[in-house]
Length: 385
Ligand code: ATP
Image (cartoon, rainbow, N blue to C red; front, side):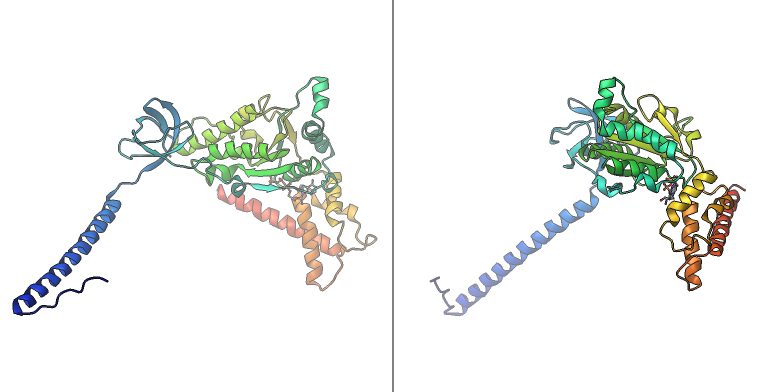
């Protein structure tokens, strides 16, 4: 048991007693106040600290390194003694004033690639593509055959192209073809949109390209489909602004990746563009996307093929709706527009409380899609005066 504090016996004792208790109290208060002051000082210090900049190591030279700052410029800087061992590619924090490397950021992977690209196992069959039999044959030879029978190419002694470039008007079936070849080879389909790669992930495009290829190798057999390739690989007269330099770096990384993988490996690249005319020739040089496949606007026969595919499960009387007479009214329509005609015809039937589609529904739908196309064309002209 703790010894009981002696009670004051007289007035002097009593004064001494109250003096010592209040002294204890003051000491305690003093201690608490000191702690609070220290905490607040630390907090003020945090507010005063200037932020460190996140950069990337390019090369190490003993106690110095070449680093790349977020706007793309590179500097030779010192590494602080407290910093962990660095290697090129590491993310680091640097002082803003003199760019001294303070410490390494403990992240090896910056992206969860699956968050940035569309990954799927498509189920599209060749029969679902209308009017592109030559193109299907070509893509089967260049992409499907090497994936399915690489030994055939080894025996004959030729190397197939690493990838193909599909070019043509919007909505003509480029994505459809790429998905169909992924389905027929049971490959993982990895879709990347060129414009998103350079706009959304500023400063990260090149790294993301590297990781997409790494991811594709992991998920092999796989097909990397790069839509709107022109956004990434357009000819540049001069690389001036930091934005242009960034696109250029992403493009260079794409070329490096294309050069780096084997033609008979189980990753293939399919690029797609509506603007082949502005593509940098570097991307279609031998050993890269050197097989070019043109995807045209369908002719009358192809339009009928596509119409048959999209109207296959529609409810209409084949004697009354002469489907083969419709394509001549759809001159210049893309596959996507022919599909839109079928959907619109269905809506006209619904609006009229019918569960079957008539010839008039199809004709009205063709007119509607034509009007929409015209309006879009006018908007486009309006934009350019
Ligand atoms: P974009 O250049 O705008 O990306 P794209 O050429 O990749 O267009 P797709 O996305 O393949 O066009 O086509 C859009 C839709 O149009 C397809 O999902 C399909 O329903 C239809 N379509 C286009 N072409 C064909 C075709 N040849 N046969 C059948 N359907 C087609």
